[in-house]
Image 1 (tube, helix red, strand yellow):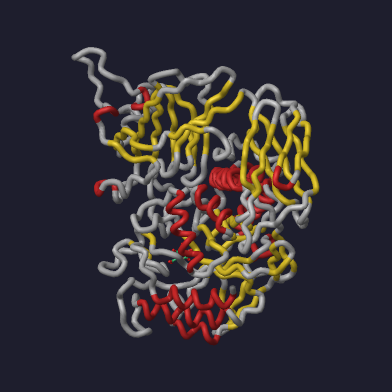
Image 2 (cartoon, rainbow, N blue to C red):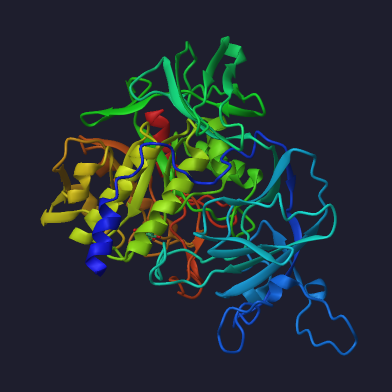
Length: 595
Ligand code: GCB
């Protein structure tokens, strides 16, 4: 029976229509009201605000926000006199007592809202790590799994002019069947880690759209528009005023229409990240966006941007806040991180190991930095579990839903360093097919492993390679694999005639810790890794990109070594305090040559 369910799940043909995700993908082009700021919170390690003493979900949990009605009434919690946490923000770095906390915290925010007639209201969460149960005025409005993608719920019928209370139970307990699973090399920052807002829309509104150059074309725009509401058949006009474009389409009875028109546009590129003001005007609604147009494809072992071969010289980035630590969430964080990548000479970043906050991709669009974006299918996911697959598919669809109109994003990646097996291949093929159905325009990749066929020859022949456009490969020659000099003699081969991005390499160094190049943890050792790596990389004929590990040091519970790691992965080219290590300058020199 289990096998049958798995087969059905794996064979289910993904829809070629846009995903029916409920996400209002573009919240930036609409009027919103922020619910950021201070939220009342209750720490609930036993989840006694959710379960009763028989461990059954209670009808009368903390989400009811009950107050004593008389002086003898017994109520054992009170949001209003409890401590607060800032939203957006992880809880671990807001108080020492939460540093290692994995469990449930309840959040409550009160608000008034005068909804205009004929409008609808949604509450939108940029992300909640990991599982969120959401309640408004004591009623459950939904739940969401996955710590790095946005979600929203309609609250039109429940919202009142005054005295609303929004309660969210956020649980970051790791689970074997989840995505990611129990073991990762990054901190499990819990909480409402991204912006929370209210979105008011007309009763029928532009729910989502894809407006990008068609695959392989530099002058034909394609995509679709989807309406939500009662008046589903409408005229829709796409306007790009600066380019003199105004094209009108009519949606079908489901509120959906495909768009297709020719346009003479200045193409987006790292040298010239041109964004156009685009407006999507329905009869009942209007949304604005800033969209860049570029083509991305592969030919043999080349990656072509706007028809010309490009080398992606970049760096990996975790969503670790620069300087202050904790989860990054703001536009300023994004500017600092991407600014450092630019200073390094990068034209490309790999946003590891999960979809980053929207500021990162919006800023990359503005700054002209190409992006690889991925979902946290990392290491040892439960490949045979249909629920795990469903979860991964959902995270993939939410990532694509939010960011599909960003020119900067050129690669979607479905996995990182996953161990070979038939079940894993079936799982990942399913994700790739699904992603292509949601977004036919971008390149698909995965960070794979490689192996030795003899002492000096590395081979890329993971069967997954057959299904990818771009091969990704992580290698740690000089750190987990021999000493830095080992790279000098290595030859690289690939079973596939496809471009390779070396998606990780590097080693740890504590900033300011010096010694000779043979001493681990010193800046000199790390510098030597980069010197030998660059020599090796230059000789790989099918190499078309690099994203060494990693831009800045980041917190990891797997890294306890006192005085060196202290729960930080020290492979950053920049320390957690913003200090550049010697290896930064080695890589910068190479990237400047490439520029
Ligand atoms: C890897 C992982 C990355 C780790 C890194 C390391 O291969 O993809 O998440 O942090 O190695 O530092 O070991």
